[in-house]
Image (cartoon, rainbow, N blue to C red; front, top):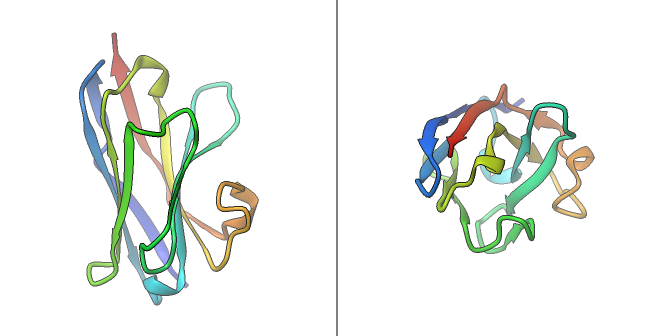
Length: 124
């Protein structure tokens, strides 16, 4: 079974950028559709972005479209989330998730495996 470990979070000023990484181990990474979700304090976990098995298709939440880029490197068993033009409201714990065939891609209940999360804090 695939295990997921996120990294790359931290404290950044508004307008700044971060790149999150999620490294997978213990399974066949390319069998999994990968997603990024986030959860702010007191709020529900929400979809950010997703990428298909080969990376040929990507999906984004409307709230982050144009400011986020999801990518994957199946040779390195890693999925990335580039985050630009960060805003204080982007502050959250960011989770990567893996699913065999999530439909729709933004439904968190379609994902079977989750990482422990990485904190992103954006200061104003």
